[in-house]
Amino acid sequence: MNRLDGKVALLSGAARGIGAETARLMIEAGAKVAIGDVLDERGRETVRMLENAGGEAIYTHLDVTREEDWTASLSAVIGRFGGLDILVNNAGVFLGMSIEEATLADWHRLCGVNLTGVFLGTKLALPALRESAGRSVHGSVVVNLSSVAGLVGSSGDPLYSMTKGGVTLFTKSAALEFARKGYRVRVNSIHPGVIQTDMGDQTFVSRARNLGTNDVEAARQTAITTHPIGRLGTPNDIAKGIVFLASDDAAFMTGAGLVIDGGLTAQ
View 1 (tube, one colour):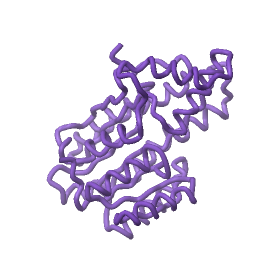
View 2 (cartoon, rainbow, N blue to C red):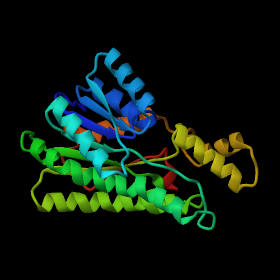
View 3 (cartoon, rainbow, N blue to C red):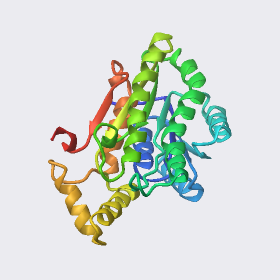
View 4 (cartoon, helix red, strand yellow):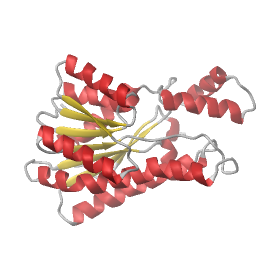
């Protein structure tokens, strides 16, 4: 199940956290992976780890807000592995600022990574994905990282919610466009709850500040209580969902959102 034998995947923001864990699981499932990130040393460390485990992987410097970086990364992937079957738009930033606090520069930074990065990645990878789709029974795949904040409002960071809501509807619209054009490229999104990553830690700091305290651990415990399952998510929880959507097991899914949130949005 969830096999990716012979597939080639490019993951943005994959030097650590959810992206790195997804790369590891994809290699276990038989894929070759390219790690794109701006954290060069961390990204190379991740690739060394994957190679030491017997996988085929490369690192490519990728600032998702820059068209030239996407072009260079895609050229590196295709040059090394001969094509591209899976794009995972994983890179994202969280600012934890209220509408009143955020400056226009803050907003542009948030949009640059969370929205422009997804648009550029999808647009520029599309020719390679279309070409690979012609050689695959179920076509090629784009998986976009949204959030539960892209489904329900976020009182702590409405601007983050605004960008992730954009990712949610872009996913659906892109899926419909590619289907209408007969491209055989499926597009789906993942919606994590609060995950134990560096970004997750940022949310605890933001929650503590909003409550007028410096008690980050208390904010973490409060976050746990919002997840009926009784714990926070792990990168592995989300990575498994991404691998599923990238595999032929999800061959009849496009324009869908896979919610992995411990029951948070069921309330």
